[in-house]
Image (cartoon, rainbow, N blue to C red; front, side, top):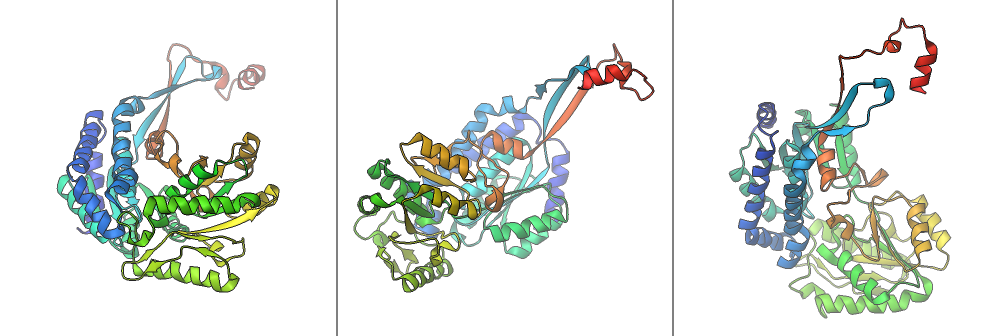
Length: 459
């Protein structure tokens, strides 16, 4: 469909007011829920073809997340939509104030390839609940999943309300030039800057969900067996192609060896003796990403001569096994940018304050994880280091709590969503003060001479 016509169709449909009612929004949420449930196997098969995700992982990290978000809104939406009463100051006597949640109009969601279902549809759920129309631009890198999504969404919903398409950066630029009312972007910081620059030319509000090098800090008080299990789960899910995956470990020096031993055990327990041959171990999305990770690993080994646990790969299927770099440091090539793969550098420390100082020099990450039983250390770390969010004694689980806002800060993004935060982000908070005609306070007018009363009420 011609892009200018598509945006015009959606804007005209929004202006009819049909998306505003609770009944319409609820009906569309139910329709999307049924669409996912009825095509669950088809969607899971497409994820396996693109990323070699097991059906269990596909449901846990993609379909299940979206279905839970729909269930959340079905439970809470009616209350969210009601105008919210707020206090009115005394100098506005005999008035009352309300905030109305008004949808923006046409929302453009630019979603990535690493979680092609979750990151396309999770935003869509919030957009439907907020009363918007939605254009979803998906990434063609996940070609099988994208084609299934496009077919399902475009056959099930009218294009004037929801439309899904794929394309390159020229398509994105064309979409932005049509002046949508809001842009949600998930992807790299570099591309996010370009999106924001283009949006600024049209004064389009933007939420950016980016990435960064998310640290995972483990001290000597941590439960090492459980920490290893949760680190392996969070890091090697989707073969590390997760924006909030632990990017590297900062481990107190005296527990490095026992932690590595526990991690090796957990990798074997999860994926077997040869993970790249495992039916449940994901693969790298394409050859370009595979070669980038392989080259980064080779560069690190050559420059440092460091110890590597794992490091096996299979070029035929773009698989890289879980890999641990056991004596890394902040100057290693792998520490230059987000790894976005199944390679886990470990940096040891004996002075926590020095580590905090190093982290504060770096760009704020999307997430931070701390494994410790020491409440003072946990408080010190989260009060000293700026990050989008995180977990204590776990990894990535905060993302799955739709009562928590999810988003980055600084170089890792701006704005947030999930649950009520999606509703707030994709709605304009319209402020209205209703003044009574029964009484008119005179001192607010410019020709009033009693300065004392003005200062008393406004102080």
